[in-house]
Length: 403
Image 1 (cartoon, rainbow, N blue to C red):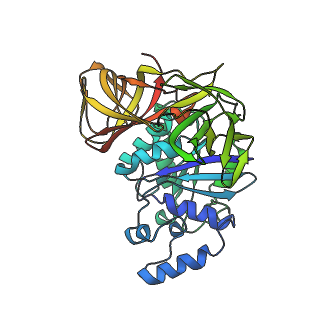
Image 2: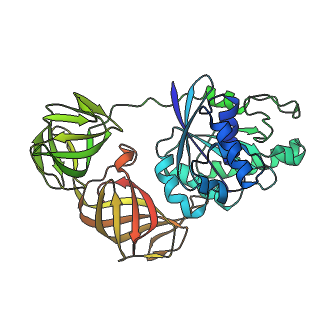
């Protein structure tokens, strides 16, 4: 069984080191990665860190920060696909896209530092994205001489935070990612802890069953190949089969799928995540979303979203460019229904005129026609980004396709 896990935590709490340790102890490091990392360390004169296993680019090693999402695999009784997402405030928008595929969240909290601002914000984002199962890894126990009291205090504060967001029955594990204590191997330095290791907690979790979703095919572009128009796009959910009758919105074009093309040939069907070209007998604009006639995508010009504002302020009446899937369209803030703390999830006000940087809100947007889906049903088309003056200033999820 494969389980998708997202690991989040404050920039200095050891998240990347923990993932590197999971890779190392599960013996799932890519071939040659250790030698590659060692070479970079020697070149840049740095001390060995497990976090270096994750750095996909030399620039990241130089800067010692993760700048994008990284997918890696480790194993216990199950196989785990980890979406490593950045911990920096300016990269939170990447976290929204990465974490939305996860079934389980690991929240890394440093024993010396405890709950900090990013800890609170990441907890809220996991809650906002509907990740119901969370494990807390209280890290850097080696820096606290493996003291039980240090673990209990940080664990108590973190569980209190998660409880305020509605989480129950959260497991907390004292670990040292750097030394390997209680990650895969039971620590001999914390005999006061009789609970399971981190990998044992993960292996106990039963992920929710994934149900088949309606077909949603997002158009990216059109190309001419051998005098035929090929519509290129991505199957975001459901299954696409040769001969399917489809409707594409918001253009309203209907089409029959003649061929499904992948390099270097053709296939009879494609599933979620597949990028393919199709012969549909028509040119379809970028941003259109296709679905079966009996379960079609429905365009809307108003929707309700929950947004985290990453920069500046947002006021009723403000105009933004909204990016959802491959569609970019103009949108206006019609109503700010609730102002929400992005640290606690607490509702701070109703029907307010504005929110500030790093605050969250439920907002009604009026837009040009576009296809969005409830995040709880089809998350691939249920998340969006707000753009102002060419910069991503907010990110959110769709709560309802009407308002």
